[in-house]
Amino acid sequence: MISSQFVFKFALFAVSSWGVLPLANAEPLFITTDIFPPGVKHTHSSSIVQCPNGDLLACWFHGSGERTADDVLVQGARLKKGAKRWGPVFEMADTLGFPDCNPILHIDPKGRLRLFWISVLAHRWECGLLKFRRAEDYQGAGAPKWSWQGVVQLKPGPVFAKVMKQRFDELKLNTAMWAEYAQPYEALLLKAANDPFKRQTGWMPRTHPLTLPGGRILLPLYSDGFNASLVAISDDIGDTWRASRPIIGLGPIQPSLARRRDGTIVAFCRDSGPPPFRVMASLSRDNGETWSAALDTTLPNPGSSLEVTVLRDGRWLIVYNDSTRSRDNLTVALSTDEGKTWPLKRRLEPRDDGATSFSYPSVIQSADGAVHITYTCKGPRGGRIRHGILQLNQLKSD
Image 1 (cartoon, rainbow, N blue to C red):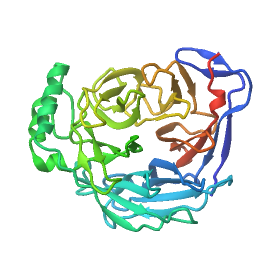
Image 2 (tube, rainbow, N blue to C red; image 1 turned 90 degrees about the horizontal axis):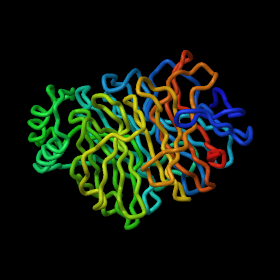
Image 3 (cartoon, rainbow, N blue to C red; image 1 turned 90 degrees about the vertical axis):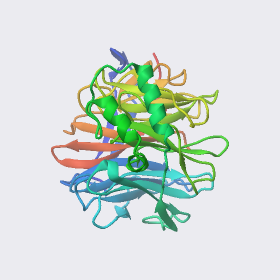
């Protein structure tokens, strides 16, 4: 069901890093459609994939709130190849009596669909269970036909606390900062890191997994309890998982992964720490096993999720909120040096339909070269998930 359709035309100007650039023509840069009409219930944190048959499949969580609302479930919808309108909303996962949040979709190297999400226990993020479902039959009408379901169980060992201490020493912490387990930041957080139960629970997905050339799958995860991240690693196409060393800094959460040509993997993270509020980055040079301390980049971040993808022409594309204050100014940026600089930026939202908040983008490049973005859209009429198609040929430097 479609509530509205907007064609975002940059007829005169497009926003760049610190100024305004004229576009060469008035072709639409960003064409958007609401997947379903705005509603009063909370709808958030979408994920999108393209099926082998060309269909687009999206999911999100929906309910009376987030971790404290027991009616929250995972919903989805399908856009058939060649169709203009998204099909009806259907249920993807629902643990009765528990909030189901942060769903992520992934198609593995065998062509199987996986849904990852968390089921929240005791209404606390740090008590979440990381669940998954798998489907081989997911390209027909309606919801995927799930063939398997389980829990991703991770056991970060005692080295977790050791790495945390090493990274804090590198960063020369001299400021107090809040985290679920820690105030002041460093001492109590290190104490929590030595607790096996706390290390093994509360790891949440937010962005797409990254499949490496050799078949290894990296599932980026984060913890609100530790205000940190890590990667779940699978070397058997998702049958089993183990934890990487943690990504530690001043609040790097919700990492999104991209791989450079030399094999270095970059984790771009939401900033959940003290000012200055910036997208943070951590590097791995051993296929996701270990990670450098997360440091600020030049991109602003208001404490909101982002996602990066590597385009088929080698450029890197990131969708994020170009602000340090609020979840407005949804922006796309391009990098030609593998994420080191982002010289070309274009603002995608807001537009003139009254919506004021745009967040938690999910980004893919489809087989035809188009870039598809789903994201949370909120305004006076309520919340919904919006789908946008980005025309890459309009993202050119003058």
